[in-house]
Structure formats: C-alpha cells, structure tokens
Length: 158
Image (cartoon, rainbow, N blue to C red; front, side, top):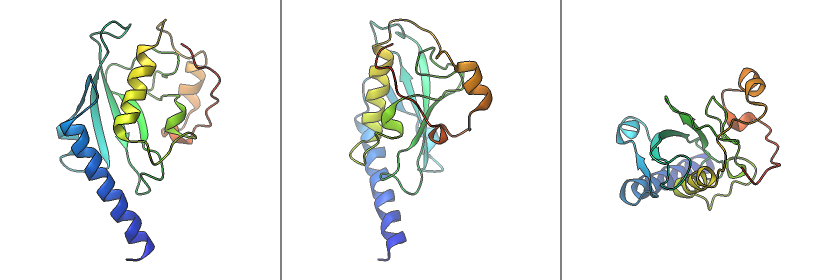
C-alpha cells in the first residue's frame, strides 16, 4: 500500500471505530446525531446536554466535528453550532472554542470521546456565564475555521 492510501486506510478505520464508540458508549450527556453521519463520515453532530448541578444544567447544545483526511494525526475541527451557543469565557458567540487540545495540544491518542469529555468538563467548571472579552472583535475578524486561529492560552479558570 503506498503512503497516501495507507493514511486514508488509517483515517477510515479510526473514524469507523470512533463512530461505533460514540454510538454504543457516548460520554454522559452526549448523543451522536445519527442523521449527521448518514451521508458522510467526515462530519458529525453531537447533541449535548449541560451536566446537572452546573450553570448549564438542562441546556441543550450541538457540537460540530469535521475530520480531515489526516485524522487522527491532525485534530478535528470542533465548534458549537445551532441555535444555542453556550455563554462561556472560552466559547465565542460564533461557536469557536478556545481549548488547547483542539489545536497545539492535540495528540493522536485523543479521540472524539475525550474531546467531548474535555468540553463537558470545561463547561461544568464554569463559575460565571460570560463571553470572552474579545468576542466582538474575534467574531468580526476570524477565519471560519477555528483551527486557523492562533489561540493564546492564558487562562485555566472560568
């Protein structure tokens, strides 16, 4: 098998495995939107419910995952989508998420499930619902693909 075919094989096999994991054993409060994967395996929507006992309890959100042919060596593009974007210090009103594992701290050992758990944890630890201080400027000037943003990770708290 030549190198491009080998990479595509790894990509396809890995995505199939993760798709099954999300269907059979999703993280708490997460459900794979089955309609989103009927026509393509490279774009998923995950329905998410805010964890009980948190500021987001009872709220419903959607995460959009887009996978390039370089996955798992390249992180998926992940953002909130739909009508309800969580108000959070690390979530922009256009759905972009400032979370290091989505860019520079990505590792092929991570998975869709681990990304989902990190996002649930990020929301669950929030103490005050507010947008990032640069939300208005960022949303006006950013690329549609959040992975093209050069994030500055300076805050581990909410």
